[in-house]
Image (cartoon, rainbow, N blue to C red; front, side, top):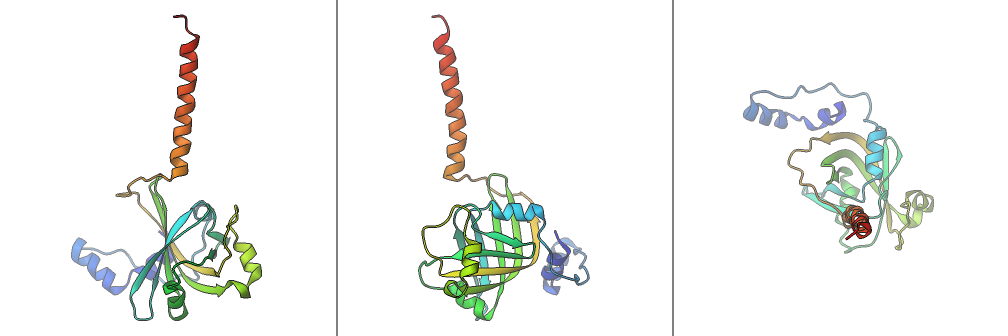
Length: 201
């Protein structure tokens, strides 16, 4: 857990809850000199994801969670302090986009279910009309491309991050991951069948 993440999250109410349930609190750190930078492990993890959850807050103070998915690598780290992704047309509610105009604070929740690993990232986000930033549209394109045209580019300035423990994460596998695992088993079955076929009866 980074110092800036703890500094941001350990509010007086959080510390009071820790004291109530556990009789002690985490040590609150001094203000960090600058936002945390993503390291090579974090950047690699981010760019291997094909989905993540994005939490924002409406102007009335209600939390809102949204799922975003795409080709592996659609969430891109353009620097250790900035992430971007292309946002496409959906149900046209634009709850996240509208909320960011008043409250830019967000939390990203990234999961690797097979490895039972999760990464939380705090930041401030800006939604940009894709028609106004063609260069950023090109820079944020996922490695394998996308059939649709982006409506927006979402830019996230990283404030802090935290790796969570694997406890209680239920392993889940994508169709591609299952297909890869099954392909190895099928290849082994074919090898064994070939060996059996060559044995004298």
